[in-house]
Length: 230
Image (cartoon, rainbow, N blue to C red; front, side):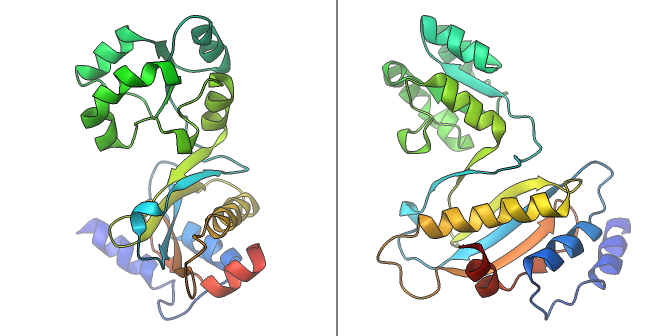
């Protein structure tokens, strides 16, 4: 299979027994990307904590993700003008709720004012499944729709671990300068360590790797990364 052959050849470029510093890892991972489009550079890090449901938050990447974020805002009155002025693609109240209730989810992020949440909450089975449900902790249930839209547009992302305790995040496009990708990654590490539960014991981040959308994963020296980022 062609993809398999290509991947195998690229895999030989990366020593899978070695742990690289973040600058080397980014350079190596980018060099193994073989998509025809501008792929995303992704990180995966395993957190060491028993109550995974308590690990979640938001990260504002200084250089964004490189991805166009389509924002929907549920709000009424003057707030609709504010949301539109901030650049939200879809703005409305009950009309939009009915549209989403019908199964439409052609957007990437969702914001709601508190007075809309009684009705937005009924969309849980649709929005929750796609990780789009507005949440106060994530800053997406708010009266300041301008701020929320601006932050989402400029590269604020949500994080939460999967069932295995691994946080997966896109941290920019492969075409980004290495320095910008490294700065975004360090911001991820800083935020995860800042949000670390007070009762977490031992090394909080156990493993860390960098990989392109299609390409080879590169293992990172996680202790050095943490020590040089915080």
